[in-house]
Image (cartoon, rainbow, N blue to C red):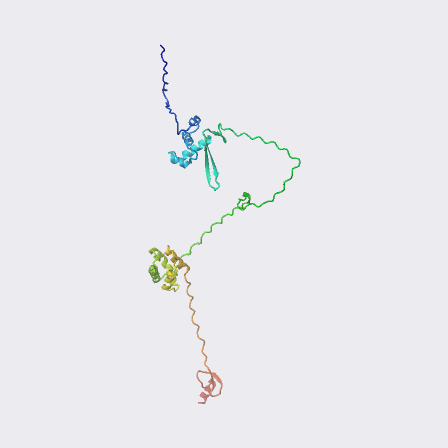
Length: 310
């Protein structure tokens, strides 16, 4: 009797990896050994290339997005992308959209490319040049068509664009004027100024000032008092015509104390001395000559003759 031949099972290798393969029917990616066994690519680059080839078209593979997905840092991922780009498995180009935004286009190749053409891809053949058509014996010359102005909505050529006007240099804002200061420090005026500023909230609740602002503004109020401004007049100036929305009452008070500071009163001119008073003219009772005297009588000569006669 014939003994049936029974094939002996293949013996496992004594060392190294043992493969147990299961045929995939869905959700698989074919990766060439030229990538998985590449001798110049790092393990990070090989794994990243396999991951990119398994992604659907349009998936995001930016450095930050990959760093959020995997534990490798952005530096290692960027270096791996550069390796794949240098060995022809990846191509990245930057394009400007019509809106002006610059985006990066990434193309993944499952076969490494050399130059701009993938390995194994058919190269475009040059098209044959068409034979020149025979010219007619008499060819009518075309009439020049009238030049029509271009529509206003079409963009002009780049050469017609005017040169960009440089933006004017920013002018620094002038410094704010400092608060007025009294020429002579008067303790009574300073106390009156402190009381006036603290009392403003009774006349206008929105003019509630802090203690630090009151001490800062008091010398300016004292400068008004030094220029003979009455406290009631100063209070009316600070309270009148307030804006609808008042958020910084101390700034408004400082602005008014600075810009509305009255000038000093002019120096009083002394009264002029009265003109010398002249006595009225009188007619002498003796010689009837005119002379000046406060009362009627005799002139000086007649008075002398009378004294000698006596």
